[in-house]
Image 1 (cartoon, rainbow, N blue to C red):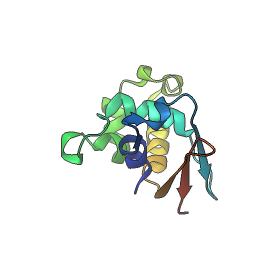
Image 2 (image 1 turned 90 degrees about the vertical axis):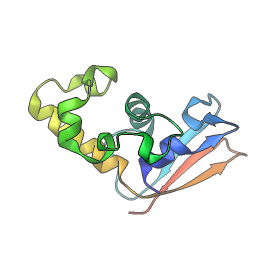
Image 3 (image 1 turned 135 degrees about the vertical axis):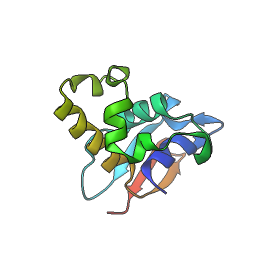
Image 4 (image 1 turned 180 degrees about the vertical axis):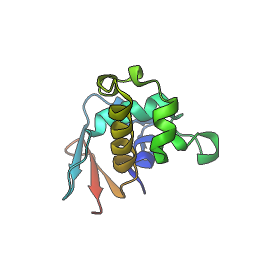
Length: 121
């Protein structure tokens, strides 16, 4: 699955994993992400409806950097608010798309209270 799917579709007892205070999100990867998973989760939460099917969401917010640049309210999330110029917004949008479209496997470690994102790099 892709990272945006993992952040919007995986739940534990009907709660999104990022909303569980005693769970940590950990990553296993060779190439680093541009943004922390929590930052990406807040972005996804601002643009997509959690738990929805693909046809119920505008997936251009995760696949099209130009669409994001033209339509996203960059003031919605703390990390995106730093992009003020058009060039900074395009760069940020490209990095968001690159991160959210990486392939991952998801492991829920209930003993260590971890939501593990295992990237296929």
